[in-house]
Image (cartoon, each protein chain N blue to C red):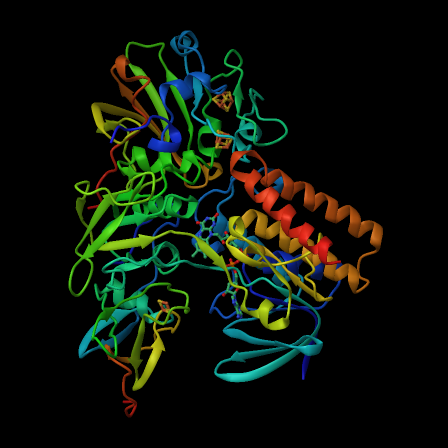
Length: 105
Length: 169
Length: 364
Ligand SMILES: Cc1cc2nc3c(=O)[nH]c(=O)nc-3n(C[C@H](O)[C@H](O)[C@H](O)COP(=O)(O)OP(=O)(O)OC[C@H]3O[C@@H](n4cnc5c(N)ncnc54)[C@H](O)[C@@H]3O)c2cc1C
Ligand code: SF4
Ligand code: SF4
Ligand code: FES
């Protein structure tokens, strides 16, 4: 959920000017915001599954340190979504295990 | 487990801690008209209240960890200090009318509006009575901290410290 | 190869304050930060700061950040963003990656101001999506403006836990409870009082027993602890929640200082192993300075003062400030630092910092 109104920061006047595809689903996003922010705004919390035990993971540090938030972005696995900015048309996949390289769209 | 009393256990000052705080005015002064009520009971490095009071009636001095001391006779109840306190620990009480008037800092969205009837809460956030909003003061000088004044029955003058957060629509 | 006079690693409050001081004296300063934006933790701090006028008390953190940025701009400080420093080598050679490419920078003086990172905590369910650092939640709500969840359990009652709880409610979330393993609240009472009157219960001597949920957090079971920090059976409480925030301390980010070969000392009150430095913030390696949370975790106000000290000292050593003027400036800064390190909350840090300074003297 986005924080549109805020008592200290005022209203968020940005508009969603980009669309990204997450596991086939299209979600609105703001160009330049971290991918992880767009996902949380759309209610998506599970970002990947661990290699061995297939356990779900989501964001933990939000500053690029812990690698819990890695996903496959435009065919490139292990992208830290909390510090990677959104570009219109990005294709994002929940990463299973170590992920696989594939052709960018 | 029995609950231990006091700010370090409960997260708000106890009666005893307030009774000792040099920023808390006497009951007699509260009955005479609006006066600041400073609930700052720990020695933290901080003194914006001292700087903010245009009448110089709050003293912290050196070191800045001293507790703020209020000169209750000289306080005119202007309310300037309320929004200046980063700890949101300053309130204003007026016990001179039939009903009690309580002013407090408020930093949530949405703000209440003048005339609203709202749930008034104590230091633990429990609703204790309904109250009427008399004023909502916003000022660029307050930097987004609003100062809200509610009117409640007199027996709640030492109890009510805020209102229940209003739900976003 | 790119060169500069003073390289500052980290554009948080410490690094930026350092850059401003040194550039004002006339030095050529380059700041590197791995983030997309400068400011470090400052832009997520939307509360009014403590301290006194000289510490910009009463001003909100992000506004202080804006002021610092505009000063660095005016003074012509070079700020390299998305630049991760991964190596510090002999003769003050800095290796960093920018936009996927390797770069080097040689500096006459280096100031390491890399800050601290949040500690984690282990319990059943601690890896479920929805369990995150309190600072991560703070970044999401105040910088990215999205809610990580609607019903939050906060773990830890230091100032970060108390402040982030308050800010989560300002952003529109509910904080279901704050729990603290110690028998008392760790942070400032005034911060605790804000969230108490907003209806947040604080449970001391309480920890997480487990987090419930298969795919993400659905609830939390807490348990009370006895004087020996052992769980007391039968004191479990269950809460419905979709988010668990951990505010269980910070650890200085010291890798670069280790790599450079700075000597360390162990001071738990400051967050663990911290580089030894003198009153100029200079480490045991000449020309390498440290400032801010890397020297021991405190808060933004003290980080800015330490940054200024390092900036003045580095500019002085390059001949931009004469000894007398530098001494004067440094004494003013030390007086402001000491003012922040008094009272029941500051004394511990004051003596810890003294120990850190003394370990320098013992080595010398
Ligand atoms: C998540 C978090 C939340 C906090 N919230 C509060 C709060 O609400 N209130 C409060 O008083 N204190 C808070 N603190 C305490 C905080 O430590 C200080 O307020 C202050 O930000 C410390 O300043 P600093 O400049 O030392 O570090 P920081 O502000 O952390 O800045 C360090 C900078 O260095 C950069 N960096 C690190 N390593 C590298 C590298 N290898 N290469 C390039 N750049 C690098 C980082 O990107 C960062 O921008 C928080 C701390 C954290 C970690
Ligand atoms: S209410 Fe006005 S006069 Fe009284 S202490 Fe506050 S600022 Fe000073
Ligand atoms: S400004 Fe507020 S928190 Fe600071 S000393 Fe004054 S009353 Fe206490
Ligand atoms: S959440 Fe930790 S690296 Fe992205």
